[in-house]
Amino acid sequence: MSTTATTAIGYVRVSTDEQASTGHGLDAQRKAVRDECERRGWHLVDIVGEVKGASGKSLDRAGLQSALARMDAHEADVLLVAKMDRLSRSLLPGTQVMEHANAHRWALVP
Image (cartoon, rainbow, N blue to C red):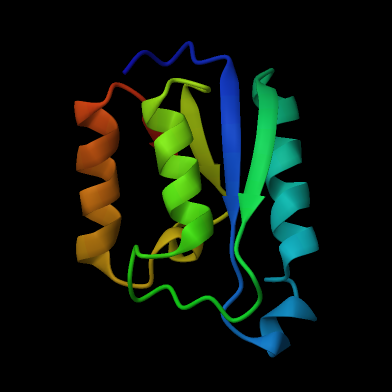
């Protein structure tokens, strides 16, 4: 994937109510996504999120599946997450998303 990506979709998730009130909250993640897009000069198409309490153990989450489908439809060049553990708590599912991104010609940027 080219490093000259100009459009991004952000993805945010919290798994506990406690995270919602700390620096890992949805608002903090949205801000991190917006700030990174601004820093890189990317156009932020949208930020997709999960309902509170969405576990990162599986990739079977409505918000994530929506974001992946939109990426595959080439609505953006980059799927941007504030931190990799917001995408997945386990290495294997995270690498599966990376492989999927590569196969469908878009980038995952934590």
